[in-house]
Image (cartoon, rainbow, N blue to C red; front, side, top):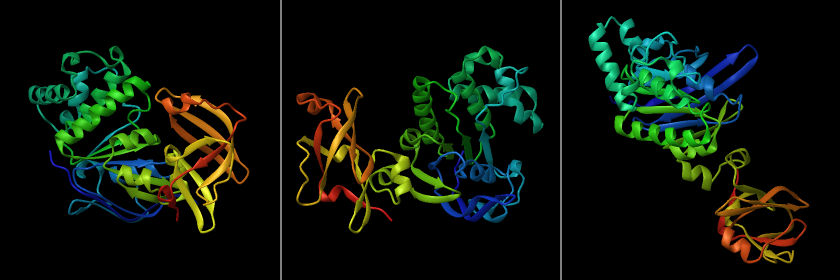
Length: 330
């Protein structure tokens, strides 16, 4: 398999009077793992479905490699889609589920089952080949759905919230498996998610969407360290949004130092605040803080630092940060 670049040029999707995707431009490099990230209704799933060909494009173009696929049927695009529901046929065995698309293409029984078994082995499910979907766990069904999508040897694999039905422990394991497969196969993965952690862990390119537009598209570290807008900073989380003389800035919660007293720093790189809540998270402790001009302030402290002098709700504190840690927002 070989991945191709995916390019969207002024792509728009409308549902009646509602514009779900608003003239977006995006280039996803060949062989990369891209996550479309955002809240419900932001346009990420509509974007994925237009790339797949399951939704018509109202304006603009979609290009896969050198080919404009805007009006091509899904079967001719070189893409495969893994749906959130997995959509396995309950009456077919695991191997026949994976081989189904090959059967529709007229591939004979023995060759298609052999190829299906090869792709089941890729996801460590070959020993379950003759079981029915109902005899599998949710994680096992997810692996079968992944093998079924890959058996067509697509240039681009499209994944619609594929981990949302899994429990947190299994989600972490399957997440690592998806990253390994993408790296080993070398094809382009485009993955829709509303989970910030999922996007940060998987993606080479994170595309944060809001109200049908792209707020920021960049590598995960840049999106987290240097959010472009207040929306990105708040949605990604882990940031304090601060009003300053020159506009609004974001400071990472783990870059904030906290000391007792509540004095206002003279240089302006700090705030006097009151502890509202203390949340122990194992290796760290999260302090929720209140200050009259700013809502939703927080500091993330190393557990050893916190427990050396524990704070309680109601304590007055001083928040400080380095000037270099205050990132100006557009």
